[in-house]
Structures are given as structure tokens and as C-alpha cells.
Image (tube, rainbow, N blue to C red; front, side, top):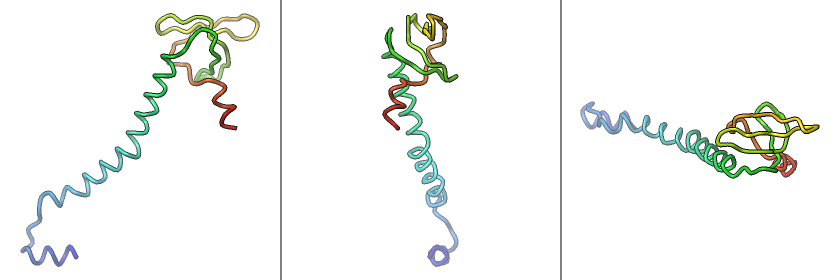
Length: 103
């Protein structure tokens, strides 16, 4: 079909038609890759901003604990036997109850 159209138009190609596949790839890439990632980051930021003392958390390193105190970007996490760890707020991954809900 494209060969017939090119033959009829004398071999000249519309510049928009040559960029159309590239534009389509970018749009598909945005909706299947970038947009879901941005949505996930927004949810994670909202979760981290809603943290309070007493919440149970899991860190990115896999440490389970309970929040004892929050100071700006530092979370003081209490683990077994009253041991406390200071971690960056960005290291908080999720709530352990999320794992129980998925099972």
C-alpha cells in the first residue's frame, strides 16, 4: 500500500509520515513505562510522608521494625530488644501489612 502511494506521489514523502512511527513509539513508551513509574513514585512519596511514630515498616535492606521517632529525613526505627537504628526516610520500603494482604 505504501509503495503504491509513493509511486503515485512521485516518490516524495510527507515529512510528518516519516516521523509518525517514531512519535507512536514514544507515546507507547510513555504510557507503558514512564507513567506507571511516576505513579508508583508518587504513591511511595505519599506513603513516606504519612509515616508516624508507632508504624511498622520494612526497609529496603529487609529489616523489620517499628518507627520510634521521625526527624525530617531521618527515621529512628526500633527493632528487637529496644535496639534503635537511624535510617534515611528514603530507605523505608513498605508496611508489613501490605505483604500479608498480598498473600
